[in-house]
Amino acid sequence: MDRVLIRQLKIETVIGVYEWEKKIHQSLLIDLDMAWDNKPAAASDDYQHALCYETVSNRLTALITEKPIELIETVAEMTANCLMTEFDVPWVKVTVMKPGAVPSAAAVGVEIERGQC
Image (cartoon, rainbow, N blue to C red; front, side, top):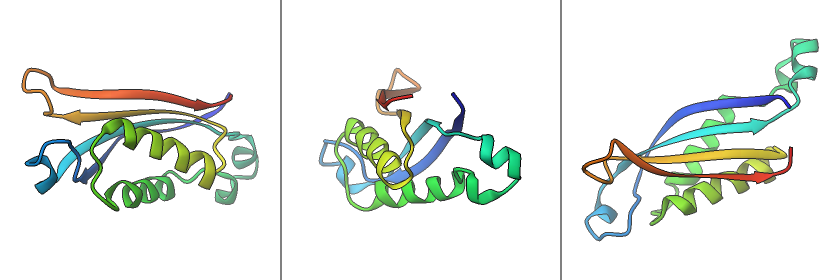
């Protein structure tokens, strides 16, 4: 299975359950593994057959910053749903990390897989 990868997509957004978190922007780091048949793009060297990581990154940034969200679990599900419905990605692994959420940890996060390979 071919995959298109995006690593540590940094998105500044309002995220959190505490009242003080709802008044500030915090960083999320998102890793994506997306199933995609890369053979047509490689054979033709044609961008139209590729899964454009810039378009994906811009869309996810818009989606996640659209309104305040409380849980990183929600971010992960929204991300997977967007990729599968808007970009026709058949399978995705989404990791969402929230740096600084726990003082004694570099980051905390969730990872989900959706779809079928």
